[in-house]
Length: 140
Image (tube, rainbow, N blue to C red):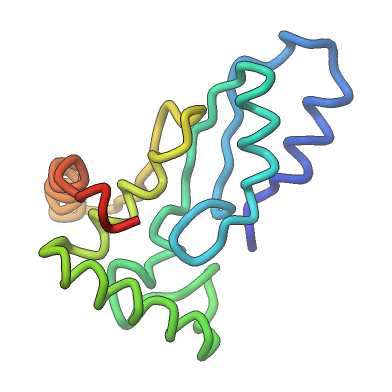
């Protein structure tokens, strides 16, 4: 699951300019996939804000036991995660904070949507959001 960037593009291109002022891209923009890049370029051109969800790759960027796109992760994705984890540690950042900071990088992103199911996850996410503001630009 890489979000639905092509569907967002199809809808925006098939409607009159100004029909959409925002779009939700779920799973198509995170440290593990950038399938939504063309969608971001079009949204920036049209002045459409993007709300990004799925920034943790359905859990793998938060927990080594997590899933990727709601399935067990393939080896190449696990390898990417470990490389990002090492880079985050090198910069004294947590991987989830780096994932949030990355999701917010494109100019057209106005919101980053984080999933949570428990009060503990709310607290955890809020700490990572706060930390994401301290992720150094040199990490990119």
